[in-house]
Amino acid sequence: MLREIIPTDAEALFRIRGDYEVTKYNIGTAYDRFDQAEDLIAAMAQAYREEKEIRWGIALKPDNTVIGMCGYNYWIRRDARGSVGYDLERAYWGQGVMTEAVAAIVAFGFHNMGLNRIEADADARNPASARVLAKVGFRQEGLQREQFYEDSSFNDLVLFALLRKDYLTQS
Image 1 (cartoon, helix red, strand yellow):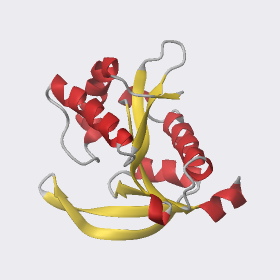
Image 2 (image 1 turned 45 degrees about the horizontal axis):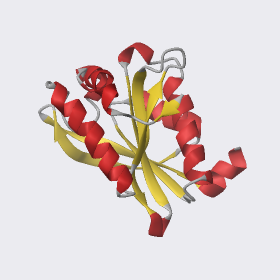
Image 3 (image 1 turned 30 degrees about the horizontal axis):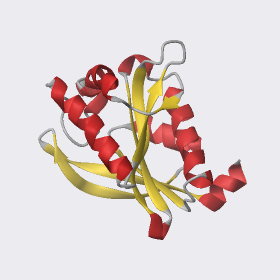
Image 4 (image 1 turned 90 degrees about the horizontal axis):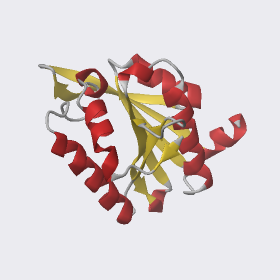
């Protein structure tokens, strides 16, 4: 289930964001201090209040424990456009959890936020993320070669998008 991320989720977010394998394809390094998770929760709440982004915790129904997060990294109302991003605890990889979560936030984006275009990008070294996006209906639109420097090398970024008209056709 998707739900609000609250301060008591800091331990779960630290577990997720503190795992190098989870964060290695995201901006920034793995967390090494608990206060980084607390700061992330506060920053997400502030960005939500300012209507700049919206993120949800991915929680297990039996005990409501956060195992990941997903949401809109930005929302540009004038262009009816937003960009999705996500993280998932390693123990839940390959089980369809993220595909289900991304499908839900995409539906929310088109039906509740009035989006016309939803964007996503993925590190070219992360084919699992590209598969999630493809399963939800995103199309690869481009490649930014050597777009960022990390792990002692320049790396490519793959660009994806899903348009409202394509989403409605496939639904």
